[in-house]
Length: 260
Picture 1 (tube, rainbow, N blue to C red):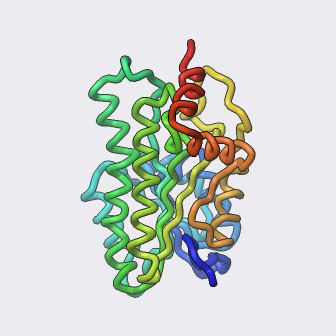
Picture 2 (picture 1 turned 90 degrees about the vertical axis):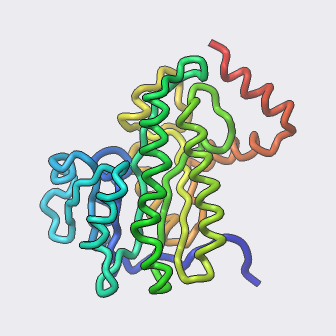
Picture 3 (picture 1 turned 180 degrees about the vertical axis):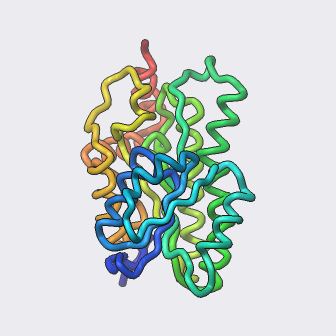
C-alpha cells in the first residue's frame, strides 16, 4: 500500500503549461530553459522584462509576462490572462527570492520587510492566483522553491532562513489540503547553487551546484512525482541528520558554525 507524500509523475511536458516566477536569473532561468527544451509551454515572469526575453531566446513556446512578485494585484492580472478554465496553468513554480547574509544583531527593518515580501508573501499571492481554479478543476500543481537553510537555524541567514522554513511548513500543510483534490504540491530544497544571491557569501559553500545542474535535479524530481526535491543529496542528507539530533547537540554544532 502506497503512503506518504507523493504526486503524479509529470512526464508529458509537451502537454504542460508551466508558469515560472523568478525566471530572469539563477535556478528559475535555468529551469525555464530546461522545460522549454522538453517541449513545455513556459510563461516566464520576473521584474526584469528585458532579461526574461533573453532567457526565452525567442522560443516559440515561451511567453514573457513581467511581474513584481510582491504585487498581489499584478499576480491576479496575469493569472486572468494565462490561467483560464479553457487553458489553465498546469504547474506554478515559485523561484523568486531575496537574500542578505546577516547576523541577528545586524538586521534592519527595511531589509526584513523586503525579504519577507519576496520570499514568503509572494508565494501566498501565487497560491491565491492559481490554487482556487486548480482545486475547482481537480488538476494542476504548485512547486515552492525553499532551501536547506529552512531545515535548521543556520547562522548568517537571520531573515532568509526563517522565510524558507516557513515555505517548508507551507508546502507540507498545502500538500495535506490539496493532494486529495487532484492538485500536486512540490517542495524544492536546493543546497548551495551558484547564483547572484550566493555570490554574496564569503564562506566556503560545500557541494556547490550550477543553475543548470539544479534545474536538471528539479525536473527529475517532478518527473518522479516527488513531494520534496532536495539536492545535492550528500549535503542535504547531512543537514537532515543534523535536524533530528538532540537539541543541545544540534545547537552546539550550529554554534560552531557561527564562530567568526
